[in-house]
Image 1 (cartoon, helix red, strand yellow):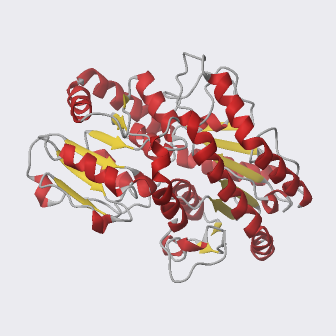
Image 2 (cartoon, one colour; image 1 turned 135 degrees about the vertical axis):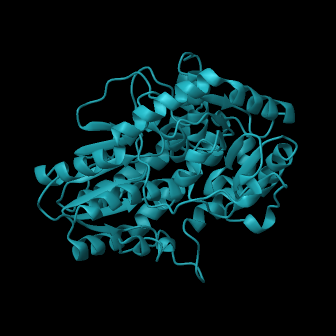
Image 3 (cartoon, helix red, strand yellow; image 1 turned 180 degrees about the vertical axis):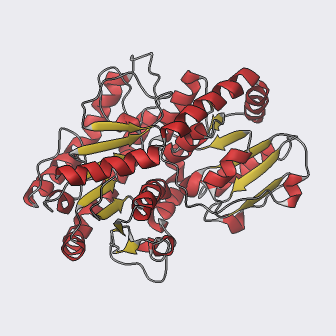
Length: 427
C-alpha cells in the first residue's frame, strides 16, 4: 500500500469479463482511498458510477441511435457470426478471429483522440489496460502503464505451450506449427498496418505479430494449478484469480431451494448466450435430468424458456451463485473458468470462440472438467459428463482444496498492490 492518493485510470475491453475484472481491482483501490476512473466503452454509462467509480467513457465507433446495453456491439457481432463457431479452430482463424481483430483495431483507431483528451482531463498517475489491442495514447501519456491479461494466458507466448485460439493439447505439438503458420498468413497484413499506425501516434511499434505491447508491470489471471509450464520474466505477475467483491448477494429461489438433486449453474456468458438456438438445445437436454439448474439467460432472455427444474434471469451475480452450486456448465471464458476454479467447482465446457477452446482443453487435460464439442455432442455425452463429474468425489475434494489455495492467494489485493508499486516506481 501507499500513503499517496493515486489517480488510477482503467481502460477495459467492453466485454463483461475484462470490465468486471477491472471493477474488482478498482474497488479495492477505491476503498484504499485512491481515485479510480474508468475510460470504458460508452454503453457502460451509469453502470460503473453506481459502483463508486468516475466514468469518462469512449466510443469505439460512431454512436448508435438510442441507448445500448453494456457490450452491445459484441453481443450483436456474436449473434450475427454464430455459424462460424461450428468450424474447427484452424478454419476460424480467417473467418472469425481475424475479423474480430479488425473490429478491435478499428475501435482503437476511432477512440485515440478521445483517449488523449481523457488523459488530459484525468491526469492519471498510472494507467491500467485490460484488453487485447493497443491504444497508443496509453503509452504516450508519460505515466506508468500496467497491462492486465485476463482473457487467455496463451496470449503470453512461451516456448513449449500451444498456440492461442487453437484448443490444441499441451502434450501433442503435431499441429502447432501449421496453426501458427495459418495465423501468420491470415493476420500479418492487418498487424503490419496497425503497427505502422501505432508508431505514427508516437508509441513503439508492436512486437512481432502481437496487437498489444507489454507494460512496465504485467498481470495475468490464471491459477497456478491450471497454468502452463513456463518461465516468465520478472515484470510478469500471475494472479491466481481476480474475483470481484461487488456482486450483490444471492439466495436460492424457493422453486430450487426445496428440491433435491445436485445444483448446477449454466452460463454461456453474455456473448455466447446470444446464440438462442444453442441455449434452447442445451436447456432441452438438461430438462430431462434429475438435477436443479440456475441459468444465466443473457441479453436475449425473453426468447429463452426454462424447464420446471430451472430458474434463471438475464443477469446473475455470478460470484455469489458459484459458491452454492455443485458443478458449472460454461462456455469456457477465462473469467468464468478462473472463478469456477476459485470456488473449487468442476466444469463441463462448451467452447464457442477465442480463449474458450484453450480453456476447455486445459480443463480436460488437467482433469478439472470435460470438454465437449458444443454443436456436435450428443444428449448422452452431455448427461453422461454430468453424471461422471458429479459422482467423482475424489475430483470434488481435489477441486475444493485447489479453490482454498486460490482464494488464500487473494489475487484482487495482490493486483491492487502491484498497481500501487508501479505508480510508486514511476514505470
